[in-house]
Image (cartoon, rainbow, N blue to C red; front, side, top):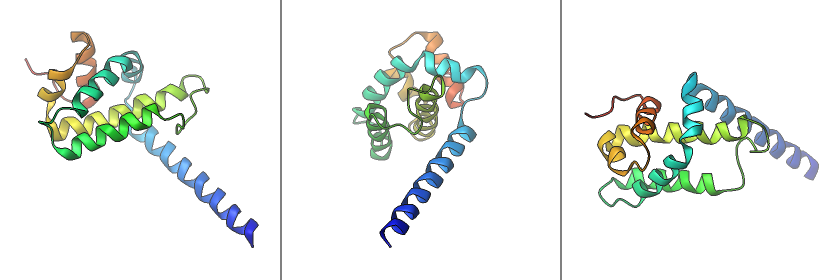
Length: 135
């Protein structure tokens, strides 16, 4: 009986991992955007921390950002970092998906206020989120 339970848990975990990986592939940035996301990832992480501590943002947005920061800090990844390219790409894809959500809810102006990088990097963030930069 115990081996059936363990087998069931293993199958459920494998199915969940497969579904999450397929979901990541569906929401990933297309073409060179993924490469840009990986390139600006250090600036993105600094910006995420700044956004998460901004009391002017809605609580739901800050909770999403804290969960994202916890995921990025966690040694457990959806796709392990030891796998070349894909290991870091999953982090970039998840960051892009959460950023799209944050921009929809808080606006691009909040992101612009907290961006620590270059203007070119901010333009890449705007492309990742699918919005035009504010003039």
